[in-house]
Image (cartoon, rainbow over all chains, first blue to last red):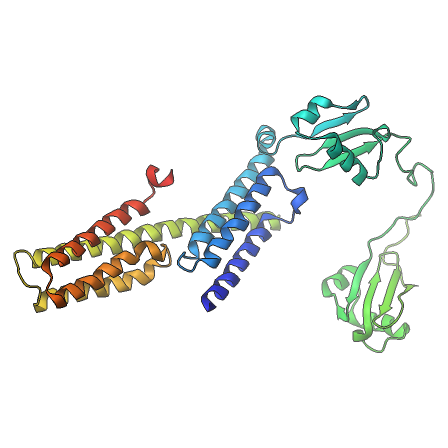
Length: 239
Length: 133
């Protein structure tokens, strides 16, 4: 049994390494060849894990071979448009201003229900609201609404709004995020000053402390409500 | 750029590892099985025309075969399914029993079986069109 435990840990680490170097795509974002590789890898990993008589190498070698194949296919799809179309397919317009393209729908083996489900997921409940819908190569449907159905943006309303900034988490559950602090230009002393100003005696009491480049911060103690605060601005306003 | 170099390095590393494993497997399997085959031929020559197996040279030759196989078997288990090679070990153990019981015919059959297994595995483990398909 100990052998199985050790093998499981070993194979888990190898599969983790394999997925790590294959990239960070989620299941729904995978191209067809990536999905096939993922399914095979999942199956391959279980064989030497459960069967002690099978050497671990019998699981590792196919895994590594698939990684190499993945690298090669990714490289080919990057350098050749034709091969990319052959391997991953190409996006297909399934709804155009005239309505649903029935031929494309049949070709993609989609039903009207599938199209409606995808539209609802995008926030549109009738085809009349949609200008174009495109079936992407990863199986997702992108929807472009008609102008009258598209949500108004600040640009449409000609509103003068301030640029928004990405909040950077500096303290997470009592721990200083060192990389984020470097990015934001804060050191431990500055963080301690901020938390002391907001009534925290030490870092362990802080659940979350985040600050964006405009100096808008948010702090929450573990046993209290969160509160926004303003501190020095990290970027100068160009206006 | 750093990411690209990391990916290329990974790619090259994996290809090298795969090549090393393939070469190692080929060398290990062919060396081990050919050594067993050679030892079997030696034993076969040794017992030619004999009516009894109870002699020191036969015992030593079989012990030698067993020792050789035990050493190679543990290395082969890194590369090959244990179940595929366990028959050779079983036949080697049978050889020892047949010496104790002085069963010449059975001894010869076992020896033939070991040679047959070795030949079969050498064929089975190589990369050829039959194995690939």
